Image 1 (cartoon, rainbow over the protein chains, first blue to last red):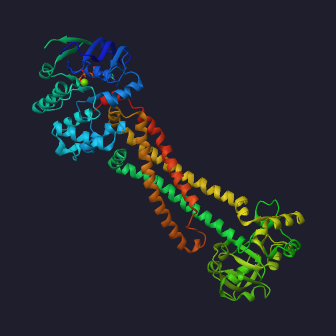
Image 2 (image 1 turned 45 degrees about the horizontal axis):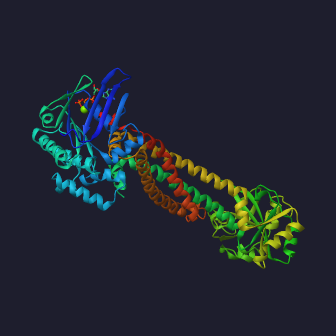
Length: 227
Length: 370
Ligand SMILES: Nc1ncnc2c1ncn2[C@@H]1O[C@H](COP(=O)(O)OP(=O)(O)OP(=O)(O)O)[C@@H](O)[C@H]1O
Ligand SMILES: [Mg+2]
Protein backbone atom coordinates (compact mmCIF):
# COMPACT_ATOMS: atom_id res chain seq x y z
CA UNK A 1 0.00 0.00 0.00
CA UNK A 2 1.08 3.51 -0.68
CA UNK A 3 3.12 5.05 2.11
CA UNK A 4 1.64 8.43 1.30
CA UNK A 5 -1.62 7.57 3.01
CA UNK A 6 -2.12 8.98 6.44
CA UNK A 7 -1.63 6.99 9.59
CA UNK A 8 -4.93 6.09 11.21
CA UNK A 9 -3.67 4.07 14.16
CA UNK A 10 -0.33 4.21 15.83
CA UNK A 11 1.41 2.65 18.81
CA UNK A 12 4.76 4.04 19.95
CA UNK A 13 6.95 2.11 22.36
CA UNK A 14 3.97 0.50 23.98
CA UNK A 15 4.40 -2.02 26.79
CA UNK A 16 1.83 -4.14 28.50
CA UNK A 17 2.15 -6.69 31.25
CA UNK A 18 -0.28 -8.45 33.54
CA UNK A 19 -0.18 -9.72 37.07
CA UNK A 20 1.86 -6.78 38.32
CA UNK A 21 4.56 -7.23 35.71
CA UNK A 22 4.95 -11.00 36.03
CA UNK A 23 3.40 -11.68 32.63
CA UNK A 24 5.02 -9.36 30.09
CA UNK A 25 2.99 -9.47 26.88
CA UNK A 26 4.25 -6.52 24.83
CA UNK A 27 7.67 -4.86 25.19
CA UNK A 28 8.09 -1.40 23.70
CA UNK A 29 6.28 -2.26 20.50
CA UNK A 30 5.59 0.28 17.75
CA UNK A 31 3.13 -0.02 14.92
CA UNK A 32 1.66 2.34 12.35
CA UNK A 33 -1.42 1.45 10.34
CA UNK A 34 -2.39 3.55 7.33
CA UNK A 35 -5.86 4.31 6.06
CA UNK A 36 -7.31 1.56 3.90
CA UNK A 37 -4.75 -1.03 4.88
CA UNK A 38 -5.56 -4.63 5.70
CA UNK A 39 -2.96 -5.56 8.30
CA UNK A 40 -2.54 -9.02 9.79
CA UNK A 41 -1.32 -9.41 13.35
CA UNK A 42 -0.01 -12.93 13.06
CA UNK A 43 1.27 -15.03 15.90
CA UNK A 44 0.87 -18.09 18.04
CA UNK A 45 -1.74 -18.41 20.71
CA UNK A 46 -0.84 -16.31 23.72
CA UNK A 47 1.58 -14.12 21.77
CA UNK A 48 -0.36 -10.93 22.55
CA UNK A 49 -2.48 -10.26 19.45
CA UNK A 50 -5.67 -9.67 21.37
CA UNK A 51 -3.82 -7.56 23.89
CA UNK A 52 -2.58 -5.24 21.15
CA UNK A 53 -6.03 -4.95 19.60
CA UNK A 54 -7.56 -4.18 23.00
CA UNK A 55 -5.00 -1.42 23.52
CA UNK A 56 -5.73 0.09 20.11
CA UNK A 57 -9.47 -0.09 20.76
CA UNK A 58 -9.27 1.46 24.21
CA UNK A 59 -10.55 -1.65 25.93
CA UNK A 60 -7.42 -1.73 28.03
CA UNK A 61 -4.63 0.74 28.89
CA UNK A 62 -0.89 0.24 28.28
CA UNK A 63 1.70 0.36 31.07
CA UNK A 64 3.90 2.67 29.02
CA UNK A 65 3.93 4.22 25.58
CA UNK A 66 1.72 6.33 23.33
CA UNK A 67 -1.35 5.37 21.36
CA UNK A 68 -3.13 7.44 18.75
CA UNK A 69 -6.21 6.12 16.97
CA UNK A 70 -8.13 8.30 14.52
CA UNK A 71 -6.38 11.27 16.04
CA UNK A 72 -7.59 10.42 19.55
CA UNK A 73 -5.96 8.90 22.60
CA UNK A 74 -7.84 5.66 23.39
CA UNK A 75 -6.70 5.77 27.01
CA UNK A 76 -8.79 8.87 27.67
CA UNK A 77 -12.33 7.95 28.74
CA UNK A 78 -14.17 10.54 26.63
CA UNK A 79 -12.10 9.77 23.52
CA UNK A 80 -12.69 6.10 24.14
CA UNK A 81 -16.45 6.53 24.02
CA UNK A 82 -16.23 8.61 20.88
CA UNK A 83 -13.93 6.04 19.24
CA UNK A 84 -16.20 3.14 20.07
CA UNK A 85 -19.30 4.98 18.97
CA UNK A 86 -18.19 6.52 15.71
CA UNK A 87 -14.77 5.43 14.56
CA UNK A 88 -14.09 1.84 15.58
CA UNK A 89 -15.74 -1.47 14.94
CA UNK A 90 -14.87 -4.63 16.87
CA UNK A 91 -15.22 -8.19 15.67
CA UNK A 92 -14.42 -11.10 17.98
CA UNK A 93 -13.70 -14.78 17.53
CA UNK A 94 -16.97 -15.52 19.22
CA UNK A 95 -19.53 -13.27 17.63
CA UNK A 96 -20.57 -11.79 21.01
CA UNK A 97 -24.05 -11.10 19.76
CA UNK A 98 -27.01 -11.21 22.15
CA UNK A 99 -28.33 -14.71 21.48
CA UNK A 100 -32.01 -14.23 22.14
CA UNK A 101 -32.34 -11.07 20.14
CA UNK A 102 -32.92 -11.21 16.40
CA UNK A 103 -30.34 -10.17 13.82
CA UNK A 104 -32.14 -6.88 13.38
CA UNK A 105 -32.31 -6.17 17.10
CA UNK A 106 -28.62 -6.93 17.53
CA UNK A 107 -27.78 -4.54 14.73
CA UNK A 108 -29.77 -1.81 16.43
CA UNK A 109 -27.55 -1.89 19.51
CA UNK A 110 -24.78 0.43 18.17
CA UNK A 111 -27.43 2.78 16.75
CA UNK A 112 -29.08 2.84 20.14
CA UNK A 113 -25.79 3.80 21.79
CA UNK A 114 -25.52 6.90 19.63
CA UNK A 115 -29.23 7.65 19.57
CA UNK A 116 -29.54 7.34 15.79
CA UNK A 117 -32.87 8.03 14.11
CA UNK A 118 -35.11 5.02 13.58
CA UNK A 119 -35.53 5.39 9.84
CA UNK A 120 -31.83 5.92 9.22
CA UNK A 121 -31.05 2.88 11.36
CA UNK A 122 -33.50 0.71 9.49
CA UNK A 123 -32.03 1.81 6.15
CA UNK A 124 -28.48 1.16 7.32
CA UNK A 125 -29.41 -2.30 8.60
CA UNK A 126 -31.05 -3.21 5.29
CA UNK A 127 -28.05 -1.98 3.37
CA UNK A 128 -25.60 -4.00 5.46
CA UNK A 129 -27.49 -7.27 5.60
CA UNK A 130 -28.08 -7.15 1.87
CA UNK A 131 -24.37 -6.63 1.39
CA UNK A 132 -23.43 -9.74 3.41
CA UNK A 133 -26.33 -11.83 2.11
CA UNK A 134 -28.25 -11.92 5.38
CA UNK A 135 -31.36 -9.99 4.37
CA UNK A 136 -33.55 -13.08 4.58
CA UNK A 137 -32.42 -13.72 8.19
CA UNK A 138 -33.25 -10.30 9.69
CA UNK A 139 -36.03 -11.58 11.91
CA UNK A 140 -34.22 -14.69 13.10
CA UNK A 141 -32.67 -15.08 16.51
CA UNK A 142 -28.92 -15.40 16.76
CA UNK A 143 -29.23 -18.79 18.44
CA UNK A 144 -30.89 -20.12 15.28
CA UNK A 145 -28.06 -19.02 12.95
CA UNK A 146 -25.01 -20.91 11.73
CA UNK A 147 -21.51 -19.86 12.79
CA UNK A 148 -20.81 -18.08 9.51
CA UNK A 149 -24.11 -16.25 9.62
CA UNK A 150 -23.42 -15.13 13.15
CA UNK A 151 -20.01 -13.80 12.19
CA UNK A 152 -21.46 -11.96 9.20
CA UNK A 153 -24.03 -10.42 11.54
CA UNK A 154 -21.22 -9.42 13.90
CA UNK A 155 -19.43 -7.71 11.00
CA UNK A 156 -22.60 -5.80 10.17
CA UNK A 157 -22.91 -4.72 13.77
CA UNK A 158 -19.31 -3.47 13.75
CA UNK A 159 -20.09 -1.46 10.60
CA UNK A 160 -23.37 0.06 11.79
CA UNK A 161 -22.01 3.48 12.71
CA UNK A 162 -19.69 3.66 9.66
CA UNK A 163 -16.33 3.22 11.40
CA UNK A 164 -13.01 4.06 9.78
CA UNK A 165 -11.18 1.24 11.48
CA UNK A 166 -12.15 -2.38 12.09
CA UNK A 167 -10.37 -4.36 14.78
CA UNK A 168 -10.98 -8.04 14.09
CA UNK A 169 -9.79 -10.56 16.67
CA UNK A 170 -9.63 -14.05 15.08
CA UNK A 171 -12.94 -13.57 13.27
CA UNK A 172 -12.43 -16.85 11.43
CA UNK A 173 -11.16 -18.74 14.46
CA UNK A 174 -14.30 -20.68 15.17
CA UNK A 175 -15.40 -21.22 11.58
CA UNK A 176 -14.73 -24.09 9.16
CA UNK A 177 -12.40 -23.52 6.24
CA UNK A 178 -14.93 -22.43 3.64
CA UNK A 179 -16.96 -20.26 5.94
CA UNK A 180 -13.76 -18.72 7.28
CA UNK A 181 -12.70 -17.86 3.75
CA UNK A 182 -16.03 -16.18 3.04
CA UNK A 183 -15.76 -14.04 6.14
CA UNK A 184 -12.16 -13.14 5.35
CA UNK A 185 -13.10 -12.21 1.77
CA UNK A 186 -15.74 -9.91 3.19
CA UNK A 187 -13.19 -8.10 5.36
CA UNK A 188 -10.79 -7.80 2.46
CA UNK A 189 -13.50 -6.29 0.34
CA UNK A 190 -14.28 -3.75 3.06
CA UNK A 191 -10.66 -2.64 2.99
CA UNK A 192 -10.14 -2.63 -0.75
CA UNK A 193 -13.48 -1.44 -1.99
CA UNK A 194 -14.74 0.72 0.87
CA UNK A 195 -11.44 2.02 2.18
CA UNK A 196 -12.08 0.81 5.71
CA UNK A 197 -8.86 0.04 7.55
CA UNK A 198 -8.80 -3.46 8.98
CA UNK A 199 -6.44 -4.83 11.62
CA UNK A 200 -6.88 -8.57 11.76
CA UNK A 201 -5.47 -10.80 14.48
CA UNK A 202 -5.05 -14.34 13.22
CA UNK A 203 -2.87 -17.37 13.68
CA UNK A 204 -3.79 -18.79 10.30
CA UNK A 205 -1.04 -18.30 7.80
CA UNK A 206 -3.29 -18.38 4.74
CA UNK A 207 -5.28 -15.38 5.92
CA UNK A 208 -2.20 -13.49 7.04
CA UNK A 209 -0.66 -13.97 3.61
CA UNK A 210 -3.74 -12.63 1.89
CA UNK A 211 -3.44 -9.34 3.77
CA UNK A 212 -1.54 -6.28 2.58
CA UNK A 213 0.92 -6.51 5.41
CA UNK A 214 1.85 -9.06 8.01
CA UNK A 215 3.03 -8.01 11.43
CA UNK A 216 4.33 -10.99 13.34
CA UNK A 217 3.74 -10.96 17.09
CA UNK A 218 6.35 -13.01 18.95
CA UNK A 219 8.03 -12.82 22.34
CA UNK A 220 6.45 -9.49 23.10
CA UNK A 221 7.83 -7.86 19.95
CA UNK A 222 6.44 -6.97 16.53
CA UNK A 223 8.24 -7.95 13.38
CA UNK A 224 7.26 -6.86 9.86
CA UNK A 225 7.16 -9.70 7.34
CA UNK A 226 7.06 -8.79 3.69
CA UNK A 227 4.43 -10.53 1.60
CA UNK B 1 -37.90 2.74 22.30
CA UNK B 2 -35.59 -0.02 21.37
CA UNK B 3 -33.96 0.13 24.76
CA UNK B 4 -37.26 -1.34 25.99
CA UNK B 5 -36.67 -4.36 23.83
CA UNK B 6 -33.30 -4.88 25.52
CA UNK B 7 -34.97 -4.50 28.91
CA UNK B 8 -37.85 -6.73 27.98
CA UNK B 9 -35.60 -9.41 26.50
CA UNK B 10 -33.61 -9.61 29.65
CA UNK B 11 -36.65 -9.88 31.86
CA UNK B 12 -38.08 -12.56 29.63
CA UNK B 13 -34.79 -14.44 29.68
CA UNK B 14 -34.83 -14.61 33.45
CA UNK B 15 -38.53 -14.98 33.90
CA UNK B 16 -38.51 -16.58 37.33
CA UNK B 17 -35.97 -14.23 38.70
CA UNK B 18 -37.91 -11.23 37.42
CA UNK B 19 -41.06 -12.74 38.86
CA UNK B 20 -39.51 -13.01 42.30
CA UNK B 21 -38.42 -9.37 42.21
CA UNK B 22 -41.86 -8.43 41.02
CA UNK B 23 -43.54 -10.48 43.76
CA UNK B 24 -41.52 -8.58 46.39
CA UNK B 25 -42.87 -5.28 45.11
CA UNK B 26 -46.37 -6.72 44.69
CA UNK B 27 -46.48 -7.91 48.30
CA UNK B 28 -45.20 -4.52 49.45
CA UNK B 29 -47.95 -2.78 47.51
CA UNK B 30 -50.62 -5.19 48.71
CA UNK B 31 -49.48 -4.93 52.34
CA UNK B 32 -49.36 -1.17 52.26
CA UNK B 33 -52.70 -0.95 50.53
CA UNK B 34 -54.39 -3.24 53.05
CA UNK B 35 -52.85 -1.61 56.10
CA UNK B 36 -53.62 1.89 54.90
CA UNK B 37 -57.13 0.93 53.91
CA UNK B 38 -57.80 -0.54 57.34
CA UNK B 39 -56.24 2.36 59.20
CA UNK B 40 -57.85 5.07 57.11
CA UNK B 41 -61.06 3.09 57.33
CA UNK B 42 -60.83 3.04 61.11
CA UNK B 43 -59.88 6.70 61.27
CA UNK B 44 -62.65 7.56 58.85
CA UNK B 45 -65.16 5.78 60.99
CA UNK B 46 -64.05 7.56 64.10
CA UNK B 47 -64.23 10.83 62.24
CA UNK B 48 -67.75 10.07 61.14
CA UNK B 49 -68.79 9.29 64.71
CA UNK B 50 -67.56 12.73 65.61
CA UNK B 51 -68.80 14.49 62.56
CA UNK B 52 -72.37 13.17 62.22
CA UNK B 53 -73.87 16.28 60.63
CA UNK B 54 -71.77 18.66 62.71
CA UNK B 55 -69.38 21.41 61.71
CA UNK B 56 -67.31 21.82 64.83
CA UNK B 57 -66.00 19.58 67.52
CA UNK B 58 -65.54 20.99 71.02
CA UNK B 59 -63.40 19.22 73.59
CA UNK B 60 -61.12 19.90 76.53
CA UNK B 61 -58.03 21.88 75.72
CA UNK B 62 -54.66 20.11 75.96
CA UNK B 63 -55.77 16.49 76.23
CA UNK B 64 -53.85 13.79 74.38
CA UNK B 65 -56.82 11.61 73.64
CA UNK B 66 -60.53 12.27 73.41
CA UNK B 67 -61.22 9.52 75.95
CA UNK B 68 -59.62 11.79 78.57
CA UNK B 69 -61.48 14.92 77.57
CA UNK B 70 -64.13 16.41 79.83
CA UNK B 71 -66.68 19.01 78.81
CA UNK B 72 -69.05 19.81 81.69
CA UNK B 73 -72.82 20.19 81.59
CA UNK B 74 -72.40 23.88 82.25
CA UNK B 75 -70.09 24.23 79.26
CA UNK B 76 -72.47 22.28 77.05
CA UNK B 77 -75.31 24.58 78.06
CA UNK B 78 -73.15 27.62 77.35
CA UNK B 79 -72.38 26.28 73.88
CA UNK B 80 -76.06 25.67 73.22
CA UNK B 81 -76.89 29.18 74.33
CA UNK B 82 -74.62 30.76 71.74
CA UNK B 83 -76.47 32.50 68.93
CA UNK B 84 -74.36 30.85 66.18
CA UNK B 85 -75.25 27.35 67.35
CA UNK B 86 -78.13 25.43 65.80
CA UNK B 87 -77.60 22.21 67.75
CA UNK B 88 -75.00 20.70 70.06
CA UNK B 89 -74.74 17.06 71.07
CA UNK B 90 -72.54 15.84 73.91
CA UNK B 91 -71.01 12.37 73.57
CA UNK B 92 -69.22 10.48 76.33
CA UNK B 93 -66.82 7.73 75.25
CA UNK B 94 -66.00 4.83 77.51
CA UNK B 95 -64.72 1.30 77.31
CA UNK B 96 -66.72 -1.52 78.83
CA UNK B 97 -66.11 -5.23 78.90
CA UNK B 98 -68.38 -8.21 78.66
CA UNK B 99 -67.55 -11.90 79.18
CA UNK B 100 -65.18 -12.90 76.29
CA UNK B 101 -65.21 -9.34 74.97
CA UNK B 102 -62.75 -7.23 76.96
CA UNK B 103 -62.98 -4.07 74.86
CA UNK B 104 -66.30 -2.65 73.74
CA UNK B 105 -66.74 1.01 73.04
CA UNK B 106 -69.59 2.55 74.94
CA UNK B 107 -71.27 5.73 73.76
CA UNK B 108 -73.16 7.91 76.16
CA UNK B 109 -75.56 10.07 74.15
CA UNK B 110 -78.76 12.00 74.64
CA UNK B 111 -82.06 10.70 73.34
CA UNK B 112 -82.23 13.64 70.96
CA UNK B 113 -78.97 12.65 69.28
CA UNK B 114 -79.52 12.49 65.51
CA UNK B 115 -77.65 9.20 65.12
CA UNK B 116 -80.45 7.38 66.93
CA UNK B 117 -83.02 8.70 64.52
CA UNK B 118 -80.85 7.90 61.53
CA UNK B 119 -80.17 4.30 62.60
CA UNK B 120 -82.08 1.35 61.24
CA UNK B 121 -83.79 -0.12 64.28
CA UNK B 122 -83.83 -3.91 64.37
CA UNK B 123 -85.60 -4.07 67.73
CA UNK B 124 -87.18 -1.35 69.79
CA UNK B 125 -87.56 2.25 68.63
CA UNK B 126 -85.99 5.66 69.10
CA UNK B 127 -88.54 6.67 71.70
CA UNK B 128 -87.41 3.78 73.96
CA UNK B 129 -83.93 5.28 74.35
CA UNK B 130 -83.57 6.45 77.94
CA UNK B 131 -87.26 5.83 78.64
CA UNK B 132 -86.58 3.13 81.24
CA UNK B 133 -83.71 2.84 83.70
CA UNK B 134 -81.00 0.16 83.40
CA UNK B 135 -81.48 -0.32 79.71
CA UNK B 136 -78.67 -0.61 77.22
CA UNK B 137 -78.89 -0.37 73.44
CA UNK B 138 -76.69 -2.37 71.12
CA UNK B 139 -75.19 -1.81 67.73
CA UNK B 140 -76.24 -4.64 65.42
CA UNK B 141 -72.75 -6.16 65.27
CA UNK B 142 -72.33 -5.89 69.05
CA UNK B 143 -75.64 -7.68 69.47
CA UNK B 144 -74.36 -10.38 67.16
CA UNK B 145 -71.05 -11.01 68.91
CA UNK B 146 -72.59 -10.72 72.37
CA UNK B 147 -75.30 -13.13 71.27
CA UNK B 148 -77.88 -10.80 72.77
CA UNK B 149 -81.34 -9.79 71.67
CA UNK B 150 -83.88 -7.23 72.86
CA UNK B 151 -85.45 -7.92 76.21
CA UNK B 152 -82.59 -10.08 77.42
CA UNK B 153 -80.49 -9.10 80.44
CA UNK B 154 -76.75 -8.96 79.90
CA UNK B 155 -73.71 -8.30 82.07
CA UNK B 156 -71.68 -5.32 81.02
CA UNK B 157 -68.79 -4.22 83.21
CA UNK B 158 -69.91 -4.17 86.83
CA UNK B 159 -73.58 -3.88 85.97
CA UNK B 160 -76.39 -5.81 84.39
CA UNK B 161 -78.61 -4.20 81.81
CA UNK B 162 -81.72 -5.09 79.93
CA UNK B 163 -81.28 -4.79 76.19
CA UNK B 164 -83.70 -2.02 75.25
CA UNK B 165 -83.12 -2.14 71.50
CA UNK B 166 -80.80 -3.07 68.69
CA UNK B 167 -80.04 -0.82 65.75
CA UNK B 168 -77.85 -0.93 62.71
CA UNK B 169 -75.66 2.04 61.84
CA UNK B 170 -73.42 2.44 58.85
CA UNK B 171 -70.49 3.16 61.06
CA UNK B 172 -68.46 0.08 62.04
CA UNK B 173 -67.37 1.51 65.38
CA UNK B 174 -70.86 2.41 66.39
CA UNK B 175 -72.24 -0.81 65.08
CA UNK B 176 -69.80 -2.72 67.27
CA UNK B 177 -70.49 -0.53 70.30
CA UNK B 178 -73.07 -0.23 73.01
CA UNK B 179 -75.13 2.86 73.83
CA UNK B 180 -76.28 4.28 77.14
CA UNK B 181 -78.24 7.41 77.84
CA UNK B 182 -75.72 10.14 78.64
CA UNK B 183 -76.73 10.36 82.30
CA UNK B 184 -76.45 6.61 82.82
CA UNK B 185 -73.07 6.56 81.09
CA UNK B 186 -71.78 9.40 83.28
CA UNK B 187 -72.79 7.45 86.39
CA UNK B 188 -71.37 4.23 85.06
CA UNK B 189 -67.97 5.77 84.30
CA UNK B 190 -67.99 8.13 87.34
CA UNK B 191 -67.66 11.15 85.11
CA UNK B 192 -70.00 13.45 87.00
CA UNK B 193 -71.81 15.58 84.45
CA UNK B 194 -69.03 15.52 81.85
CA UNK B 195 -69.09 14.51 78.21
CA UNK B 196 -66.00 13.73 76.14
CA UNK B 197 -66.85 15.89 73.19
CA UNK B 198 -69.62 18.08 71.93
CA UNK B 199 -70.47 18.04 68.27
CA UNK B 200 -71.73 21.40 67.15
CA UNK B 201 -73.90 22.29 64.22
CA UNK B 202 -73.90 25.95 63.26
CA UNK B 203 -76.74 27.98 61.86
CA UNK B 204 -74.39 29.39 59.31
CA UNK B 205 -71.32 27.39 58.52
CA UNK B 206 -69.52 30.45 57.17
CA UNK B 207 -69.50 32.02 60.61
CA UNK B 208 -67.35 29.26 62.04
CA UNK B 209 -64.31 31.37 62.79
CA UNK B 210 -66.42 33.84 64.70
CA UNK B 211 -67.98 31.02 66.73
CA UNK B 212 -64.61 29.50 67.51
CA UNK B 213 -63.11 32.83 68.63
CA UNK B 214 -66.07 33.77 70.80
CA UNK B 215 -66.39 30.34 72.38
CA UNK B 216 -62.73 29.96 73.22
CA UNK B 217 -62.67 33.49 74.70
CA UNK B 218 -65.66 32.75 76.89
CA UNK B 219 -64.56 29.19 77.80
CA UNK B 220 -60.78 29.07 78.00
CA UNK B 221 -60.92 25.40 79.08
CA UNK B 222 -62.20 24.10 75.74
CA UNK B 223 -61.06 24.11 72.19
CA UNK B 224 -63.24 24.16 69.09
CA UNK B 225 -61.91 22.63 65.93
CA UNK B 226 -63.42 22.38 62.54
CA UNK B 227 -63.78 18.71 61.61
CA UNK B 228 -61.10 18.98 58.96
CA UNK B 229 -58.76 20.74 61.36
CA UNK B 230 -59.37 18.17 64.05
CA UNK B 231 -58.59 15.30 61.71
CA UNK B 232 -55.23 16.71 60.80
CA UNK B 233 -54.15 17.64 64.33
CA UNK B 234 -55.51 14.78 66.41
CA UNK B 235 -52.52 12.88 67.74
CA UNK B 236 -54.01 9.42 67.73
CA UNK B 237 -54.81 9.72 64.04
CA UNK B 238 -51.29 10.89 63.35
CA UNK B 239 -49.79 7.97 65.24
CA UNK B 240 -52.04 5.49 63.48
CA UNK B 241 -51.26 6.95 60.10
CA UNK B 242 -47.55 7.05 60.79
CA UNK B 243 -47.59 3.45 61.97
CA UNK B 244 -49.41 2.37 58.85
CA UNK B 245 -46.89 4.07 56.59
CA UNK B 246 -43.97 2.76 58.63
CA UNK B 247 -45.19 -0.83 58.43
CA UNK B 248 -45.89 -0.36 54.75
CA UNK B 249 -42.46 1.04 54.05
CA UNK B 250 -40.89 -1.87 55.91
CA UNK B 251 -42.83 -4.25 53.72
CA UNK B 252 -41.45 -2.35 50.78
CA UNK B 253 -37.89 -2.53 52.02
CA UNK B 254 -38.17 -6.30 51.72
CA UNK B 255 -39.48 -5.76 48.20
CA UNK B 256 -36.52 -3.49 47.50
CA UNK B 257 -34.13 -6.21 48.65
CA UNK B 258 -35.89 -8.60 46.30
CA UNK B 259 -35.32 -6.22 43.43
CA UNK B 260 -31.68 -5.73 44.45
CA UNK B 261 -31.20 -9.46 44.46
CA UNK B 262 -32.91 -9.94 41.11
CA UNK B 263 -30.94 -7.15 39.49
CA UNK B 264 -27.62 -8.27 40.93
CA UNK B 265 -28.10 -11.78 39.57
CA UNK B 266 -29.21 -10.31 36.30
CA UNK B 267 -26.01 -8.24 36.09
CA UNK B 268 -23.70 -11.05 37.22
CA UNK B 269 -24.98 -13.44 34.58
CA UNK B 270 -24.67 -10.82 31.87
CA UNK B 271 -21.21 -9.43 32.45
CA UNK B 272 -20.06 -10.43 29.00
CA UNK B 273 -23.12 -9.01 27.31
CA UNK B 274 -22.72 -5.72 29.15
CA UNK B 275 -19.07 -5.65 28.06
CA UNK B 276 -20.24 -6.03 24.47
CA UNK B 277 -22.68 -3.17 24.90
CA UNK B 278 -19.76 -1.04 26.10
CA UNK B 279 -17.72 -2.07 23.08
CA UNK B 280 -20.66 -1.11 20.85
CA UNK B 281 -20.59 2.41 22.29
CA UNK B 282 -22.80 2.29 25.37
CA UNK B 283 -21.58 4.66 28.06
CA UNK B 284 -21.47 3.60 31.70
CA UNK B 285 -24.48 5.79 32.23
CA UNK B 286 -26.45 4.10 29.47
CA UNK B 287 -25.69 0.71 30.99
CA UNK B 288 -26.85 1.97 34.38
CA UNK B 289 -30.00 3.29 32.69
CA UNK B 290 -30.66 -0.15 31.33
CA UNK B 291 -30.50 -1.66 34.82
CA UNK B 292 -32.71 1.03 36.30
CA UNK B 293 -35.10 0.52 33.41
CA UNK B 294 -35.33 -3.15 34.24
CA UNK B 295 -35.98 -2.40 37.89
CA UNK B 296 -38.67 0.10 36.89
CA UNK B 297 -40.31 -2.49 34.65
CA UNK B 298 -40.32 -4.97 37.53
CA UNK B 299 -41.78 -2.31 39.80
CA UNK B 300 -44.47 -1.42 37.26
CA UNK B 301 -45.68 -5.00 36.97
CA UNK B 302 -45.35 -5.39 40.74
CA UNK B 303 -47.54 -2.35 41.32
CA UNK B 304 -50.27 -3.65 39.03
CA UNK B 305 -50.22 -7.12 40.58
CA UNK B 306 -49.97 -5.65 44.08
CA UNK B 307 -53.00 -3.41 43.61
CA UNK B 308 -54.99 -6.29 42.20
CA UNK B 309 -53.97 -8.51 45.10
CA UNK B 310 -54.60 -5.76 47.65
CA UNK B 311 -58.04 -4.84 46.40
CA UNK B 312 -59.10 -8.48 46.19
CA UNK B 313 -57.91 -8.95 49.78
CA UNK B 314 -59.80 -5.84 50.88
CA UNK B 315 -62.94 -6.98 49.10
CA UNK B 316 -62.67 -10.27 50.98
CA UNK B 317 -62.02 -8.52 54.30
CA UNK B 318 -65.01 -6.30 53.76
CA UNK B 319 -67.17 -9.40 53.67
CA UNK B 320 -65.77 -10.84 56.90
CA UNK B 321 -68.34 -9.96 59.61
CA UNK B 322 -65.67 -9.08 62.20
CA UNK B 323 -64.25 -6.43 59.91
CA UNK B 324 -67.53 -5.03 58.78
CA UNK B 325 -67.35 -1.30 58.51
CA UNK B 326 -63.70 -1.25 59.55
CA UNK B 327 -62.25 -1.54 56.09
CA UNK B 328 -62.49 1.30 53.67
CA UNK B 329 -61.52 -0.09 50.30
CA UNK B 330 -61.54 3.27 48.58
CA UNK B 331 -58.37 5.16 49.35
CA UNK B 332 -57.63 8.76 48.55
CA UNK B 333 -55.87 9.25 45.21
CA UNK B 334 -52.94 10.84 47.02
CA UNK B 335 -52.41 7.70 49.10
CA UNK B 336 -52.46 5.58 45.96
CA UNK B 337 -49.92 7.90 44.37
CA UNK B 338 -47.83 7.58 47.53
CA UNK B 339 -47.88 3.78 47.30
CA UNK B 340 -46.88 3.84 43.63
CA UNK B 341 -44.09 6.32 44.34
CA UNK B 342 -42.81 4.20 47.24
CA UNK B 343 -42.78 1.14 44.97
CA UNK B 344 -40.69 2.89 42.32
CA UNK B 345 -38.37 4.49 44.84
CA UNK B 346 -37.65 1.14 46.53
CA UNK B 347 -37.12 -0.57 43.19
CA UNK B 348 -34.73 2.18 42.13
CA UNK B 349 -32.99 1.93 45.51
CA UNK B 350 -32.54 -1.78 44.98
CA UNK B 351 -31.06 -1.15 41.55
CA UNK B 352 -28.40 1.33 42.67
CA UNK B 353 -25.68 -1.14 43.51
CA UNK B 354 -26.33 -3.46 40.54
CA UNK B 355 -26.34 -0.45 38.21
CA UNK B 356 -23.07 0.84 39.64
CA UNK B 357 -21.53 -2.58 39.30
CA UNK B 358 -22.75 -2.91 35.71
CA UNK B 359 -21.54 0.51 34.67
CA UNK B 360 -18.05 -0.31 35.93
CA UNK B 361 -17.59 -3.55 34.05
CA UNK B 362 -14.32 -3.42 32.11
CA UNK B 363 -14.84 -4.83 28.62
CA UNK B 364 -11.33 -6.23 28.15
CA UNK B 365 -11.50 -8.21 31.39
CA UNK B 366 -15.03 -9.42 30.80
CA UNK B 367 -14.43 -10.54 27.21
CA UNK B 368 -11.41 -12.69 28.09
CA UNK B 369 -13.57 -15.32 29.74
CA UNK B 370 -15.82 -17.58 27.77
N1 LIG C 1 -6.02 -9.97 32.17
C1 LIG C 1 -4.99 -10.81 32.07
N2 LIG C 1 -4.41 -11.29 33.16
C2 LIG C 1 -3.35 -12.11 33.08
N3 LIG C 1 -2.81 -12.52 31.93
C3 LIG C 1 -3.36 -12.08 30.78
C4 LIG C 1 -4.46 -11.20 30.79
N4 LIG C 1 -4.77 -10.93 29.51
C5 LIG C 1 -3.91 -11.62 28.74
N5 LIG C 1 -3.06 -12.30 29.50
C6 LIG C 1 -1.95 -13.12 29.02
O1 LIG C 1 -1.29 -12.38 28.05
C7 LIG C 1 -0.84 -13.23 27.02
C8 LIG C 1 -1.32 -12.72 25.69
O2 LIG C 1 -2.70 -12.88 25.64
P1 LIG C 1 -3.54 -12.55 24.34
O3 LIG C 1 -4.93 -12.86 24.63
O4 LIG C 1 -3.21 -11.18 23.89
O5 LIG C 1 -2.94 -13.58 23.30
P2 LIG C 1 -3.40 -13.92 21.82
O6 LIG C 1 -2.23 -13.72 20.96
O7 LIG C 1 -4.61 -13.15 21.50
O8 LIG C 1 -3.75 -15.45 21.93
P3 LIG C 1 -4.91 -16.28 21.21
O9 LIG C 1 -4.42 -16.54 19.82
O10 LIG C 1 -4.97 -17.53 22.01
O11 LIG C 1 -6.12 -15.48 21.28
C9 LIG C 1 -1.36 -14.61 27.35
O12 LIG C 1 -0.29 -15.35 27.93
C10 LIG C 1 -2.45 -14.36 28.34
O13 LIG C 1 -2.54 -15.43 29.24
MG1 LIG D 1 -6.63 -13.65 21.19
